[in-house]
Image (cartoon, rainbow, N blue to C red; front, side, top):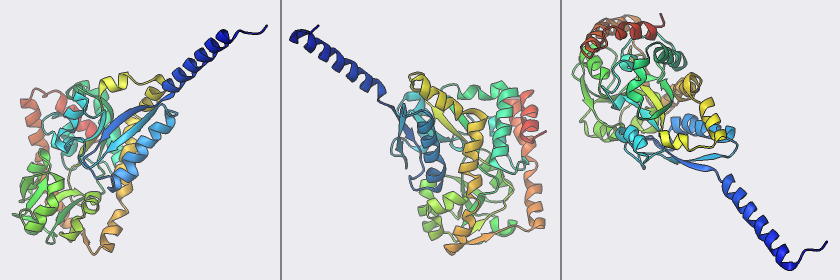
Length: 341
């Protein structure tokens, strides 16, 4: 049976509509990802971008990311709020700029927690999240994909003059994030200065600060080696907690295949992957620093013991602060779990 021209036209139109609907449905969801770090930063190239590419691949093309680096979408100290407001769909967040937001999780900033890698630290963070659920309550405004700490093996004090002893550090103006790092530097005799990492190059160049509490990646990524030739490597310090935060509505709107990919790269496994690629894999960068003419300094065992003795009372101060904030019962458990006990 032959179809009339009008019927053929109707079938062709229906087929076209069906094809167009399929094509539209196949379009990936585009998500805006913000980070304060530069696109060329080691951690962006070796951690953040591979993490996003990993999700894209596992989502089978149902989602893609637009990377907004170097604070082009939001300032580093506004990243959490920007995600909550939907300005960014996702962001890398340094919890070091949100002091007081989650006092219990700030235990990771305290020195001497006893874990040797960021991966081990991530496991302990999620142990706290599981056994002390109230510790996650301050993060309720956004969907936390993954929590992960910096690596204890890559932390440094960057300085314009060599620091080998407590006497060398005394009175030096050292940039840090707020919170526990303020108390740490004060205990060691330094003068802490809270400022954005983006402003530190000029600060050291002009002499308004003498150094920066950071990690080996920040030393190289922000080109601090041009104005500060010294890196003190084995400081007995705490680390910063980082996060990949996502807007809840943006997650809820994802197709099932994309949600599955996000979920597979979230939680403790996502945190361990990020910790490894963000911090642990930075350790060879100390060789790069020396190749650029910098001196990497290590404290002697005796000198490190002097620093550690001065920092030990900070645990008790944190416990007291938590008790005053209403966490008298929870804080000792958090401390024990962070110490791996």
